[in-house]
Image 1 (tube, chains in turn green, blue):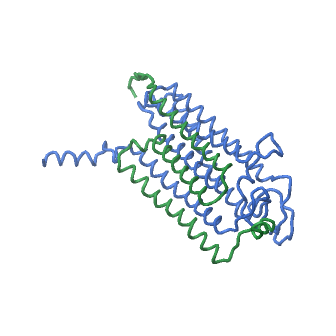
Image 2: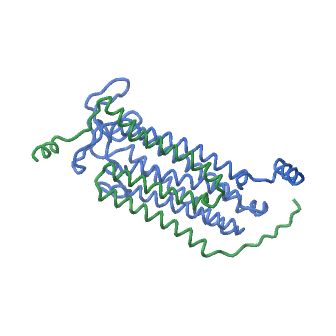
Image 3: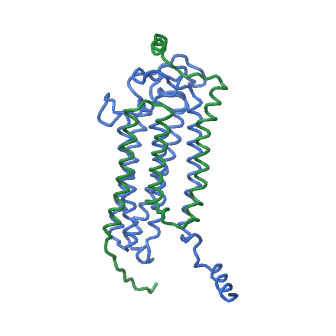
Length: 123
Length: 254
């Protein structure tokens, strides 16, 4: 309790601040790219793969730079990343394999408006 | 050799040694976040599973109309913006929310950075900006929820289970946990659960940020000699941002 407080404020490291805003800029640009794909590309498996890929790039920058995990020791990095890799695997497996398998085994069919089917028949 | 071994053994078990070179608090925060990530993964897995086993809309997106029979196109659901009634602005509002959350994450990093330099005023300033960002995000979400619950101008006709009996060809406006005008009942239920669970995390993050903001302003961390608490709170706040990145992709884009 008797400690004398003698705090020295260290000067700002301009490079470090610049680095933080650079990562923020990268996140904003990736989000903008996602919007371009959302507006100018038809929905489909390829677009979904692009979205998930860009999301993982964003997640990498947030976890590695903002949360500083990239600068921790290897043991900590792997103890966080490895369980998440298995989780992502599980998500992908349930999306592509299980969801589709349940859908076909239940005989669920997609909805297509009558007009669009006629167009397909004409060709 | 034997001597050094005993010394290091002793110091290993008497405190002062940090496993993985991270302090106890930070390490536990990482493992808490890992477990929290499992919880969110559970919700996203449920979403993915239900969505990909539900009927999809295969027609031309410009002809799309809401129906309880198939899963909606997200751009058609989230196309409102406060003050622009009747104007179709797909995904613009959620883009603003994403931007706010990323910015508040940046101000949090700046607070942590100021803490490393023992710059009390810097920490207080950037923590305040982070809190404002968090509150702004929550306000946006409140508007989005109220719009989602109220619904659009055109009713969707569908069979619903209401007050204990089936109502055929009912006019559905908006959404609740039982039925909604946008798609199958699971669509709105998942929306409420996933964005609600995330919003609750943002809310608790804002509360924790406010507590640490006052502690920092009162000089508690300066007396302690380090701003590690800001780092731990920062980890949590970045995690909330990280989860939003995934919710944004799975719920609004795909």
